[in-house]
Amino acid sequence: MEEHFTIDVVCLFCQATLKVEEGKELQSGDMIKCQECGEENDFDSVMEVAKEKGIAKVEAEVADELNSKFKNLFK
Ligand SMILES: [Zn+2]
Image (tube, rainbow, N blue to C red):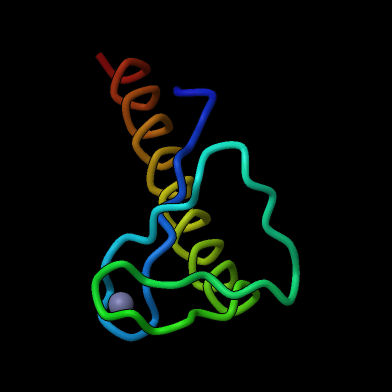
């Protein structure tokens, strides 16, 4: 299982992946401007969506891991 999970932050308006400058610290209340549509995304809302997606991704990975373990058990 991978140690790191990348969480894609997407524009709430056009679903484009938002590129956050490396090393830039974003915090609650910040606005992230979308390069695609130019809309300002509220950082808190964007992170909320990203977290939900991230959690879903982690759960899927864990499920895969368990499935392969069970397969090995019943070989
Ligand atoms: Zn956009």
